Length: 406
Image 1 (cartoon, rainbow, N blue to C red):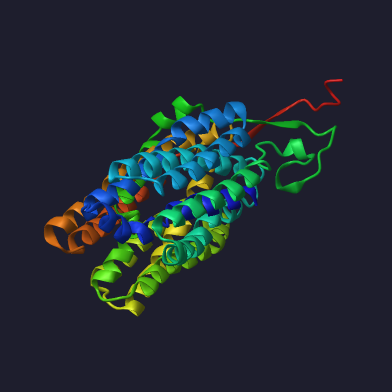
Image 2: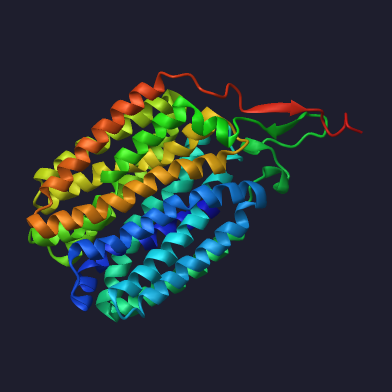
């Protein structure tokens, strides 16, 4: 539940950005591309920082990193509400929310991996379903706050909410089930049972393996298109005649689909194969983005949003479990953190490039089609990668039990 709450308020706050695009353009006289760069900067940081926060969590524990992260998210949102220029929005939102989510996300998700073996995919899905629920709830809340309080006070209110919920949830994060008197999957501790220790690939062994290189390339290429809807779906809908309320509802539809994807697909992946499901997620995102390319009305856009959310949610849910299964528990947070730098680079380029292309062409057709092609290419890479052997054959090794050690 702690990881769920952190992803709910962290990513939920970040994904409210689309609701603020029009207000920020009007307030600062900025182009859509320059406003989109705010989100791209934040996304680059919150996925890229995992390369630092993941290893720190393996060494110092996830709780401290998560608390720091949620304090930064709250401060970043509040300071964005006081910005006097688009540059100050870059500094406040981009750095505050970006660094904050980056500190909290990978440690929180990495901690979940240590608590489960049999149903790890389902557990990961439940943990990151907070992103889906946050996407479903927070943009609508932000839109209501903007109407009621203005965009500046809306950011102040969201900052307070993120601090209250995020820090409170972070206090309950634990990376070791033995701290709570239990073994993974809730099995009781037994003094006569050999103690499981974390085994698996070193960070160096993992990142040099063909499995990791292929997974990194697939996620990098896919991410060029995955985060374009989170910034541009609301402006796209407004451009096609939808009102603000209906446009923000489309983001909520992504959240609904994402939540279902994390719950349902994460559990199915445990039974039917996580690697094959990962491949299916890339194909699914490509197909749904193709629908967006021709959708103009509320219902067709809603269909796109639901389907895209479903496959996006499944992708996010399955990734940590794939990493744990391939490389073991020894350095799982660090390896996940390095993998997410691929998503960081894709997020930095994709949404901002889509905005600048729109500024030039006054159309989203080209960036959407590029997003489709990117996910098809990612699927092809994932298919090739799935055929290579795993560098780690077992999750754990056993040491003598406490009783045997006297």
